[in-house]
Amino acid sequence: MEGTPRLFIVVPCYNEEQVLPETAPRFLDKINEMIDRGAINSDSRILFVDDGSSDSTWNIIMALNRQDPHFQGIRQSRNRGHQNAVLAGLMEAKDKADIVISIDCDGQDDFNAMDAMVDKYHEGYDVVYGVRSSRETDTFFKRFTAQSFYKLLAALGADTVYNHADYRLTSKRVLEAFADFHEVNLFLRGLFPLVGFPSTTVEYERHERIAGHSHYPLRKMLALAFNGITSLSIKPIRIITALGAIVSLISFIGVIWVITKAAMGDTVSGWASTACILCFVSGVQLLSLGVIGEYIGKIYLETKHRPRYIISDRTE
Image (tube, rainbow, N blue to C red; front, side, top):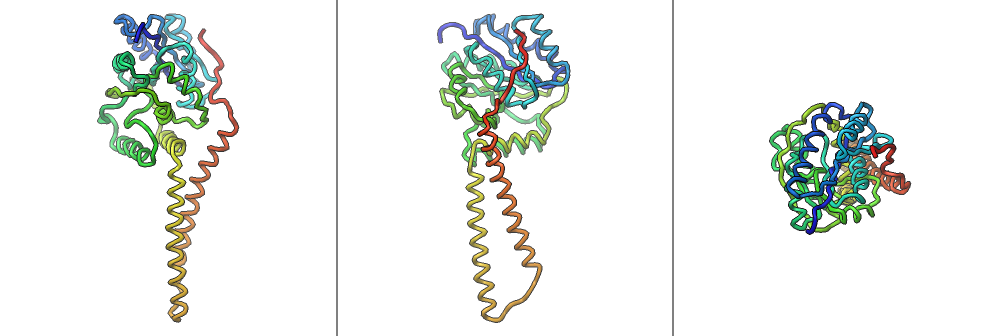
């Protein structure tokens, strides 16, 4: 590709006053390193997205901007969640950059993978997914649940990249096409494969968090996983339909059995079997209603067309 592309590194931040002073210089070093070797334009930027932090994160971003123009920042009017923060940064950079790399603020993702991503862009790829080479640093529980989640998404027909989170490079034309996606319930790692365009992967090792603590506890991880499943696939509803058909068939067989026994005069009254059947069927019904209700709730939110993010402040 002719010329050097202008790169924006989009970094979502939420209450990162401890880690931001540590990782910001590393982002600057990396962008200057790529500028020096001629991979990107000298007008490239680092765009921090403050997701309505309640600490001094925004003050730190403004101070960084005053120190070096390579640092820029936008601030959401309130906390909207990680996916909305990433989206806000991508859409902010869409009209200013040729390529955009989204990466978390905590320093766990290998900064050096950006070099390989940019090189892949120069080779002609519009999307470059950062993929973890291993999960040896994770606990057994986190490794097992994460891998099971990706396998479950694949089984449900969702098009995702295995072991990829939100560390990726996207070109300008991908972001312009992505702007036509208007989902309120965001699961970005499942939406970008739907856009298409040539794509590839770059492997990297994930490190320990540099400072502070994770803002993604198990509760939020499970919520994100469930949101991803219900946003990308309708197979859970089809599974409910199949389950309902199986339970109905079993119930019909049971009714025939009861009628046959009654006709033969061989009836034995018992509360245990009745209670077991009622509990089983009631549990299936409640579970089914819960999954269907989740889809209906998503439809309800989508029809409102509320803004997915609101920018209240900018450093420029």
